[in-house]
Image (cartoon, rainbow, N blue to C red):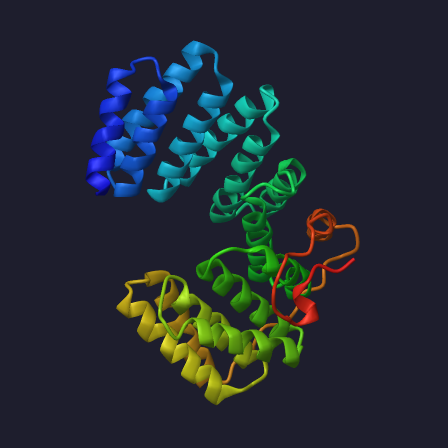
Length: 311
């Protein structure tokens, strides 16, 4: 099915020789199929056609595609160049949300390159440029929370996870947000929130899917924060087994390291409170400000009050 879609997209792009959009679509489908060389050819063609036509929107999209492709291949420096070009092209055409997507992608790139202060700057730019109703905005909030969590700012990440939870769609994203929320709650020693979210996550990962291994790892870290060594060991073991089964090397690596920490009784997460007015606080406040503009979701059942956005 995917091969047929790729062939159709490539044929359409060849027949419509002046179409940057057709070439971009062919590149995206090739990338999804793992055909990196074919994807690069079509993305470059889309960029060239967009440039020749003076269409900055098509150029920006093509540069985003090239950036995503290079990031997939681990070429972070090259990906950064394409994302910056996409942002400039989008802003020159007044497409703020398209520029936001480029800055959003730059967060992961600069983090992988070890330039964490720049990651925070890109988070702030993406938060400024995304419309609050943009479909990628919930993902930005989650990514910002995860960035803060990785840097030990659990109390800053907690309200982001909590307030975006009612607005995420699909079980996979819900598992990611809930497990991160649970770990952040444990880091600040909020046992009630940890237990509620851990119970929900365990119910969702009963049918193992994408993200389940990482979710179990996050819960294991949360249990370690409470020095619940037996539960932490059981969760980390489940996370490792599932990660190995699904060939999730990244989660397998951190779960294995966690089991060693549990065995040596290494204490769990410690919250880092940001200095007043620093970049962490600025990013958090900006995102919370925009989250307050989101209407409460329409639900037909009673949910715990902490799931709702607060004023």
